[in-house]
Image (tube, rainbow over all chains, first blue to last red; front, side):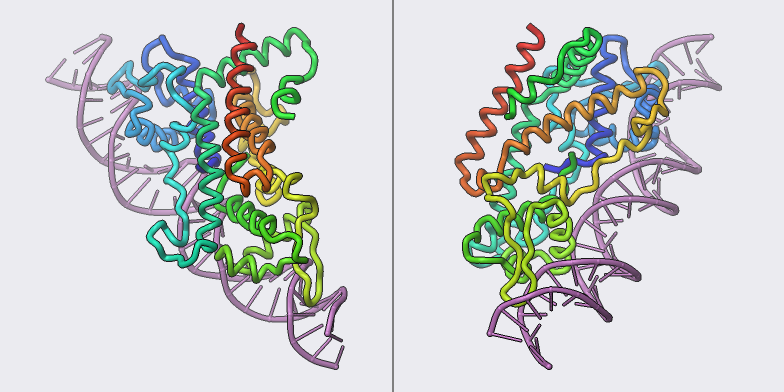
Length: 155
Length: 155
DNA sequence: CTCATACCCGACTATTTTAGTCAACTTTAG
DNA sequence: CTAAAGTTGACTAAAATAGTCGGGTATGAG
């Protein structure tokens, strides 16, 4: 699992699509304008998103992209994986280069952790993020108290 | 929040330290040998880990590094943050460059998500990773917690 | 039909990050 | 003193990131 600005751009763009569903295809130009991501870079990202079956493309005038599945059915993990090369284990690529259990320990530990992060992000859909943000804004408007949930949830 | 090979190296090295506590300081040469990370690169990483108060250094012969706090008190999030520059928001760095709420939406959305990942990794300590079964439990607990929040927020 | 719109694709490039090298220096145990 | 170890800074090669450019191709509106 890898999280970088690249994944962030992809997720942001997908969230933009999710926020504007139901009005037909969205052009990348619109996304570019709204989210300030260069059009050409978006084209690269969406080429991968399309290959990963996360979006459908409609060519020609009036065309654009739309989510292939509803926002409730697309996880953040899927989006991030779609645009990122799988992380390489640099040495001992599972081939058996490394002798002794101790040497492979690092990869084992990391892969253990990486799995957990993946599982976590698999549980968050595009819809979750949009709704959370909405809640946040409403809460802000109502001048509700400080973010107590975080303390409760993760303390 | 950013996850790359750099963070992985740092976490791996810290796990190595955690696995060898109680026998005095560990030299970077040892870590390098065991985890196959170049000594010079480890030096760079540990310079940051030291500044972040995650490790203590002992100079001179017989010296090395040791965890500043017990492995149960150091989270993965701390380690990753220590070695990574904070992720930049590229445009509209909170200064107010961007007019209109719509423009800043992307950053809001991402920061929302980034927070969640950070909270998740804050809940995992070095010790948790070493005791593998524990990781599973923590992750499960937090996953459930996250979904519950959504339901509550919505309901 | 045709033309503008929008996706599609590959090559190229600048910048940043990653990963590592090298050399000089400081501290300190023996 | 001397050798072992951390400390620091300058440097660099390779890769990833974040684009740009320029030409395609499909297609719906006129």
